[in-house]
Image 1 (cartoon, one colour):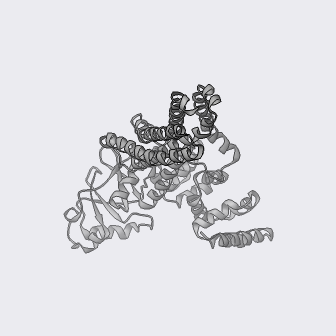
Image 2 (cartoon, rainbow, N blue to C red):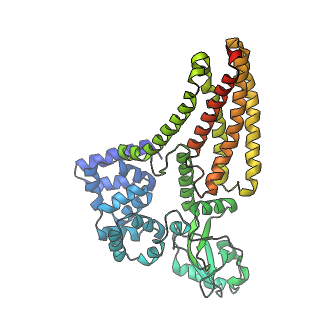
Image 3 (cartoon, rainbow, N blue to C red):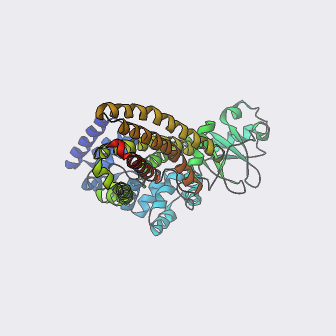
Length: 450
């Protein structure tokens, strides 16, 4: 993306529209690459869009719908009449057209689908949820019958004339439509013309099922370096194909989702450009939850008000214990959520991993606690205070390592997203344990502190 190029194009577009030269504005828009074109289009004012949109060709409209974010694409689609939207969707890949139709009002989507020439390729994709393999697949792929020869397959390719988006794998099906093999273009071209595809196809095929989560698909394609992966139903009948460029979008979405949830933002479609009302509505609930957990931590401290009144210096250092525990837990939590997301952490390794993170927390606590305790002793000239602080840090960081690794595993076992609410739970736990441990030790050794 070149921001300067986009800004220059926007200036030319606006100047042309002010002069009433709509075609010149369209030409300036089309000079941009598709992704940059979509970004420039979003920056146009409503009246500018209203002047441009009726004059855009179906192909240009299709490119815009493909490159725009989901919500932006739906907003654009809703401004088009049924015939124009159907023409644009006919020029899109089936999976991308299905994404747009799936977000429209059901009646509007049905009307548009009835006008589409490529409806048969799109209709089978509509029943599947967006974040499943069925929702990600395209029906734009090439399949071969089991008995066809290499020469026949090449002739079939010439007749079909596959587009640039069609995966360069040929999938072999039996008479019932079941997936039985895959042939690469290289193997096809090198095969003897009269050789049957059955003789040189690879019968061991990586595939996913229509109901599999998109994260499973991304993990499988990344693990085996696949350019595309077939999607089958419960009877292993080939239903579609997912290509690598679709998986790049999935990886970005899943990474964004986990990052947002670690920050207690449950909606992964939010961005820095989201409307204020939408941002407030979707982020506020977790802030309420944080407020409740903070009040619980405050309640723990309130039980030691008399102690703090006697030894006010304890109030100065209690946040050190809680902060070190929170940081330790966040490290363990982040590593564990990533491991679960990538399929690196299963039930068999759970006990060993939790104990390992506990040991790491303990060692970190010893190293950090001894230094902090020594520093406080030299600073305040109070050996008891330095010792209490050191022991509290060691204990809290040990607990933090255990909890940071354990909470995502528990959430996963409950069929919940390991990233969702993990940081709230872990932070609350380490804060409360840290305050209770530090102030409890202070109460136990009150004469030495005084």
